[in-house]
Length: 124
Image 1 (tube, helix red, strand yellow):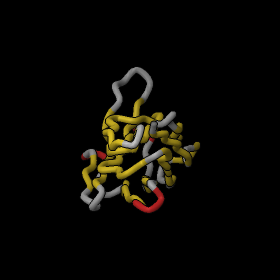
Image 2: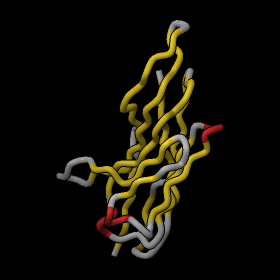
Image 3: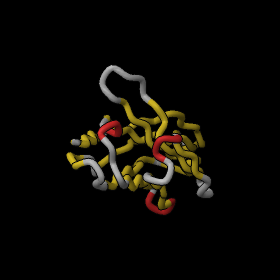
């Protein structure tokens, strides 16, 4: 099993910054991709940013230039630096990871493991 724990959410004024962290634990062999998603009330969960093991990144258009995703492979941790936050960024933010882990002596894939979420609220 792979467990993800997010931290770093909170309440901030528009224009402010927050840094989210997510650490994966378990019998992990390798995490191929890590990402951040968000879900606002009444809306579907959407991709915010993702990063591959080698550092290739992909962002939602509305956060480009404001958010930066990074990872520390040795710590199985992914970060999301969020600058110039806007009220429309308000949502629960979830971490996601895909890769391989050891189970019963064999490598098994884990797909779409999710954290519990961390709330980000941006006031105008």
